[in-house]
Image 1 (cartoon, helix red, strand yellow):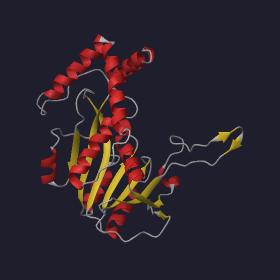
Image 2 (image 1 turned 30 degrees about the horizontal axis):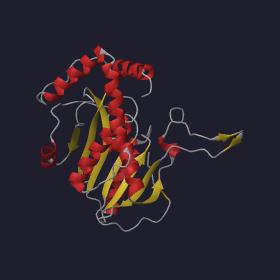
Image 3 (image 1 turned 180 degrees about the vertical axis):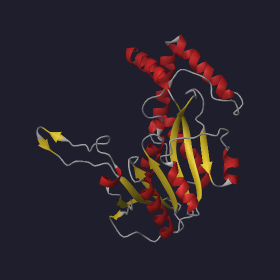
Image 4 (image 1 turned 120 degrees about the vertical axis):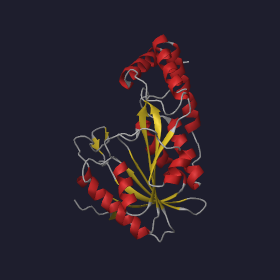
Length: 286
């Protein structure tokens, strides 16, 4: 299916922009990529350039539009979107940010569209942002794994040791950018698989990587405070359960061991998350 961008305004002349992409969904555990993209849009000079027709990429049975009803009066529906924004950093770097809901349909059309945008804008670099669940403890720093077509960049960032086959989702954009001749990088924060909801520590970890590589910096704002508060809640829940404490200690031992070690056999994230939720729910507010 051929997709085109519905332009909201005439695209500006850009100076070798970096293309960034972040979708919610399977490759955004803890909403790390989405939260980072939102922080970029809030802090930098941002102009909405256009969007993709949502009817072509979303299954509304799974991702329904929302509607506010105020005492019986209907508001306007808010449809899910995939949006292209232009951002300019204080240092004058141009960024093109593709963000929104993970599409259900037309992935090939979307990759072809992004390749055309990259070519017309003169982009030479692509960065995908996201996060994936894994057997990692919340008591250790967030690790960010990388994918790239640049061997030197992979060695610099730390090459993942495993060879895996995954449901592709957002990474197919990276392959399309690779085939279009761009230098590509995927940054994927590893989120404890027992944590539900947002995980601010992962968002901050993505920010640190982008700052190191591209001098793209977001202000921590409330993220650091939210990270500290979440850590306190998770620690308190673990203290109330010897079983959870043991699980986390096992994860810590694996984390601290050689990175080449295989992932440990541990209870499922759903099991641990249910335990955490129960202890957090039953624990009185401090």
